Amino acid sequence: MAVMHSTRHRLLRRHLLGGAVCLAAVGGGAFRGRAAWGQATPGFPSRPVRVVVPFPPGQDVIARLPAEAMAEFLGQPVVVENRPGAGGSLAAEHVARAPADGHTLLIGSTDAVIYSFVMAERPPLDPFRDFVPVARVTRDHWVVAASPALGVDSLARLVALARARPGVLNFASPGIGTSFHLQAERFCRRAGIEAVHVPYRDNYVADLMAGRVSFVVQAAAPLLPQVAAGHLRGLALLSAARLAELPEVPTIGEAGYPDLVYNAGVTLFAPAGTPGAAVLRLSEAANRAAASPALGRRFAELGMETVRGSPEDAARFLRGLIEVQDGMRVAVFGRAR
Image (tube, rainbow, N blue to C red; front, top):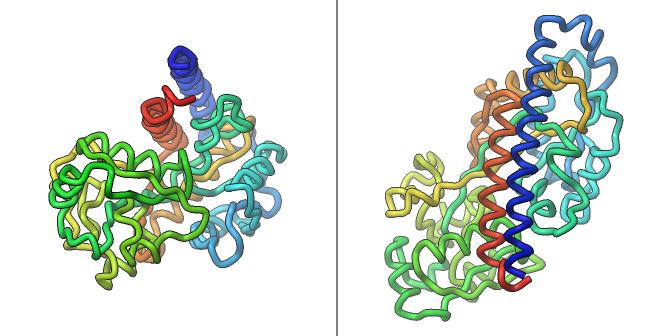
């Protein structure tokens, strides 16, 4: 089995390099489209742009916040369409099959888009074959958070406790192979500790606060209220800089593990084959939205920060994230599957 994973890893690297070439070609076309916009996509967009989000109404703020600013730049309404279900794959498959004309987009967690690609031997969707990254929208912040019942107030003390009680502490995640799971495993391996993974179908925060779960490694946004109120202990942020909303929580570098810096965030995707000039136009709209101070403040309240950059920047980030996640997948599951 180890041979199978080694082979798949080589194929994945080859695929990523191939994807880099393809995306560079698309990006080159996009920038040529800047000079010849009228000839490349006359009148784009010619109708409302649909942004499909893999969450139900009420949980789609990541799409609704930038939509208004994007609409103003594009001169057409940007309509948020909710398609929750199947861990985000329903929304992704819908957009992958949509006409590649720039009028149907996918917005969502970068982790969610690459999850099945990294975990499955025959993934139903390929982030490079089926999509073109348009722009990163936000960068999120990740945190190591512990239950107050554990009695630790620093990452060093968590590590010391785990080393003294190998296999006794546990950590939760939304499921086996999710980014929350893999990043927690990455932390445990780097810190030299043993902890038991407890995958949850439902929300595990109540169990974390009650002490039935020892700690988690996950996106900080959902935990901000609990950490700020003292119901959870923020031990370290997997970021290069501290978060204004959690000023007392040190970075992972300050805690002694600078190589564990990690962030994912929200990315905007178009179907593969979307004209390069349309991709560039949409990227410019997303960048215009990201430049809004009001939008930046709103996302900051959610534990995220806005990001500006080109489609090539988004593709490069996606490739790096896939390599990190795939490396952890092989490390965690390579001998078991």
